[in-house]
Length: 368
Image (cartoon, rainbow, N blue to C red):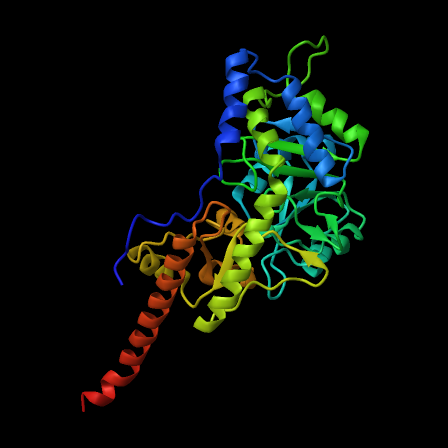
């Protein structure tokens, strides 16, 4: 089955004319740096999560850096985090001079294992980083019960819930990313969110360096008002964007089982947002190549596990996920024709794989 039409991208922003008008209005005003719109954006995201307030930043990594500093994490401290996640988490831990303590995945899922976290915690542990991977809530309640400060990374899970409570409202502090293809976008951007006035004040005080008489290390991590205008436009559409994701995921779940694939497991009591739709295949790298030939772009959902960066052995469940996890296109702007093409490409790829396995099995016998 050769590709018909342009490549179906693995991901892309979901933007409309209202978003364009919102940004253009700010650009025409000339007030484009951090200002009142940034403050409104912080308040609306915080309201959506049901937390006290937010501190907008230039990126999700900047937000994570400020969150660690606000908690007082520094040299000599340990931070527990999963190996199967974005390298930005590791970078932020290293920014503050702390020691990363990596843990493996939970059985049957892509979030960190509570049992592994429990074993990794020591008297030097100052924080636990909990990314809710691919929009699926981790066992955040179990992790919070360990009594160590928790940073929730909701970059892929804005809008997901546990027992109807939004992720990002359980830990001491949460961080979000608004990169181009995240749940909502400001192009680049992020936010620190918390119910703690102290943590919020610390993060806000470190976000920029000007206008203060006391000299200390601070950063230029501000968000601009034209980015905030886009964010405001996007967050007001967030319920509709999440509904579209869930409806696409339901369609995938119905059809991929016919192909012998299993839909992602949903932990009881949780409502994921399907930021990524990840299926397990025997050889994800070969499947990606085959699907590309059929005109569908897929991706490894995690580029490189963190333990490989650090040269640390072990992490069997992470290694298995790295070999087998395949992320197929799912985002609100995915068109119906692109959905159908993705299914047809998956069907053709799996059929070709079965034919190849049959040839490998039968050739020695038929040659006699």
